[in-house]
Image (cartoon, rainbow, N blue to C red; front, side, top):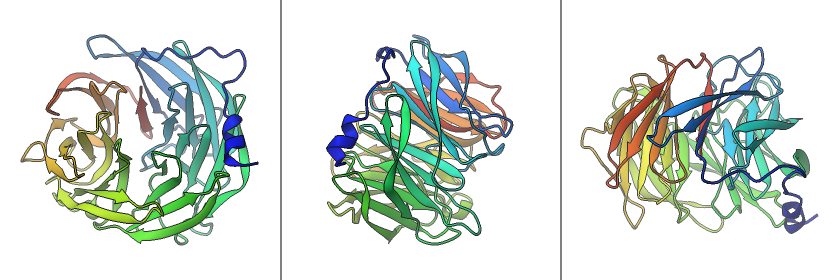
Length: 363
């Protein structure tokens, strides 16, 4: 079946109503070893979050932080949520119906220790980290009538045994996938053919050390954090543009945060800003994105907002009005209002998350 045929299978399950695109929700993955679940919040008009409840994923979490970005992924229309179950090597598909999630499928991930997942036009790819003896890989699925169907031959390897990949994400046009490896200082790129299968891949060097979480702007440029091994005050963010063959071309090289262990980041929907979560410093660094893709600190100190814990996930609302940052230690989600110049104002903090929580997405 060609890619067009695969995408035709990516339809809403019969009987499922369309989600209200005007509603704003935040999801995080509890990742508990005794049973994984997604926790859902709604956003009130003043920006504060209201806990709605939990929905079991039908799989098992790892019980400890995954140390990755993208443990949860939302479809472009906000209707479908995919989640990794690192404890039993499965992935889950859930449907957002009104103000609740409905579990529709659980499938083997096609490898060991699924850690990140991404969606594009009904195609789903999961990143399996592997183990000390089993190489990591990526594996593709198509979403069909509320289920996930593994795609034959939609698998490709990471650069080597024992590397630690941290995220998988589609390029904006869906023609490829990107996976940073933080221990090898490589950025893996996978080109997808017209059938949605990886037909070429390469392992390219990062300009900075310990590449980690990344996001794309509306022009398809990539902005990636660099933790520099967790060295104090040494982390940075770099920007790239990608060629048609997914060759990486650096724009801004390792622009410092002046903070410690920048690991997670998100680009604002309008493409003007990128925000990096600094795990070691418990704060967020904001950058302005210029027309040519270069980046510049919004605050000379590198501190745009403070979370008070080890910042481990970032997400933005689809309207760009709010930035969400989840942190360990204090186990909270901090909500910031984003002004027109990119400055952040804290409006809410919600706590009570268990140790091991991983992943954060918003709409």
